Length: 458
Image (cartoon, rainbow, N blue to C red; front, top):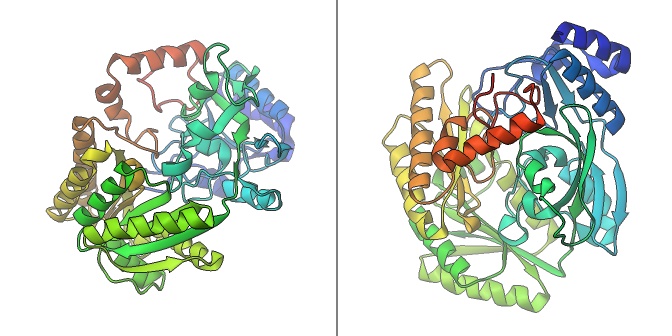
C-alpha cells in the first residue's frame, strides 16, 4: 500500500485525466492566504461520479489521502494536501443534471460555480442566492458551509442545499435528502456533509433550492463618521426587522483601497453597502425607513443605484475588496480571519478589533456581512518579516477569543481547515470529540482530507 501504487493504478484508470505536471501540482498546493504551499503527489480530473468512486476506492485500497478541490478559493487551507496524496479537481464536472422550475429546484454537479449556474438560470426567472464573493464552486461552497453578502435574507449553504450525492471513503455512493421542501425521515445526513470540508466524503452533486428573481432591486452606499456609527445603524435596522437583501460594512482602509485600486471616488470614511429586494413599493418603503435610521446615526451622502449596471459595478467592487487590499500593499501577503457574534455585541467586537489592529504594526482593513454579525479582517504582513506574520496570528487569535467570549463563533463562513483548528475544542467542548468519532466511523483510515476540522487522528 502506497501513494506510488495508487498513482500507477489511477494512471491506468484516468490516462490524461491524472496529472503529475509540476505547475498543476503547485497550483493545487497553494493557498489564497498565508499558508505555505503543500502540493499533492498527483491531481485527478474526474468526469463522472463513477470515476470519483473508482478514484476513492483505489486510494482506500492503497491508504492514499484524497483531497477535494473546487475553485481553490478557500481561506483556511481546506484544500491543501498536508500529507500529499491525490487532489481531486472537479472542474470537469459542471453539468446541470436537472432543473425543475415549478419546484424551484436544481440538481447540479459539484464543479459548477455559482456564477455559471446563475448565468444558465437567467431565462427562468430563478436564481441561486448564496453569494460568498469569490466565484467558488458549489461543491466547495457546500463543503465549507459558505454564506456571503446575501445570507442576511436568503441564508447560507446550510439553508439552500436540500440534498447531496456523496462518495464515501470506501468508494460507496450515497444520496441524501429529496426534492421535497421538508422531511422528518431519519438523520439529517445532508446537514452532516454540508460544512464537513471533505473530511467525510467527496460531494459530487447537489440538490439546490432556487429563489425567484425579485420584482425590484435597489442598492445604495452610505457614509458614516465611524465604524461604531455604521454598526449601530445595522443593529437598529436588523432589530426593526427590515428585510435587507445585503448589508455590508467597509472601513476607511477598505474604502481607500477601492479608491486607489478600483478607481472609486468614495469619501474615505466607513461605509455601508446595501441592497433591497421586493416589489417596487416595498423597496421604496424599506429604503426610506433605512434612510431615517441611517440619519439618526450620522449617515450621509446616500448614493442609490437602481440601474442593473450600477448595482453590478457596486457589488463587483465589494466582491473584489480582498484583491483591492492586496494590490494596495504590493509584495505583502495576508491572513484573513472572520468571526461572527450576536448582533447585540457586533459594535463592541468590531471596535475592539479595530483598536487592537491600530495598536499593532499591522495594516488590517475590516469589512464584512454585518447584517448577520459576521465581519472579516484582512491582516497584511511582509513575508520577509516573520515578526509581522506572528503579529497577524496574534491579532486573529484575540479576535476569535473575544468572539467566543461574546457567545459567538471562531468563523462565520470561512470554515476551519487547518487555520482555525486550535479553536474547535474551546468552541465545542466534548462535541468536538464527537465530530472525531463520526470521522473515524465514516473514514477509519483517515484518508479524506486529513488534518482538517476534527481532532488529530493517527
